[in-house]
Image (tube, rainbow, N blue to C red; front, side, top):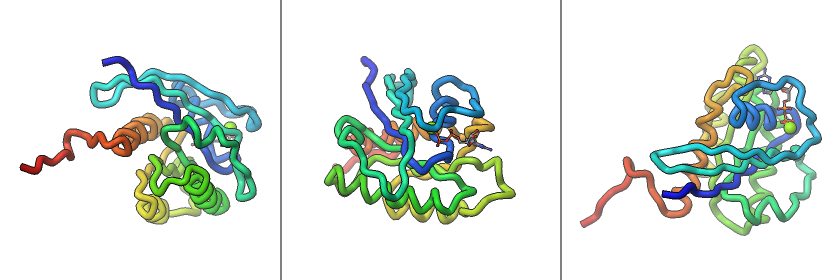
Length: 182
Ligand SMILES: Nc1nc2c(ncn2[C@@H]2O[C@H](COP(=O)(O)OP(=O)(O)O)[C@@H](O)[C@H]2O)c(=O)[nH]1
Ligand SMILES: [Mg+2]
């Protein structure tokens, strides 16, 4: 089977680790000081459940509650990674605003989304519990993960999970949960 082309946008408040997660996924390294104003698109080939994918990762420059999204964030994007930092209540509030704006802009009731609580290595500074993150995602019918871009913890899972969420939204249920009605 030929690879499927997928375009994913990473969104969230500033400094939550959007670029660090993108670079960790694409290049397998942690870059400590990446220009926060750059908006970059990375490409990576990956494989999930014996399907090949060419993934384009749009690492956005970040949003706050007042951001107006460019139309391109809805047009050819298959799925979204919404990132907050587990150390920042503000960033947790901002993902909720972003979510509402995305639904508004796309006019859809459901979008393939993975909600990500990043920086789990900073456990002494944790401000958002795992449970709070999980609850928010479940209200959206979205997947949820906690990660550390720094320690490369669960970073690949973000993208693999989102690719499966996109398949689900396209009506392709994963085999293990498919059910046959006769
Ligand atoms: N401790 C820790 N720091 C991180 C992590 N991810 C990103 N950072 C740091 O947080 C800052 C902002 O990261 P960056 O990826 O530029 O955030 P962005 O503005 O959302 O793209 C940088 O100093 C990163 O080194 C992480 O998982 N753990
Ligand atoms: Mg960045």
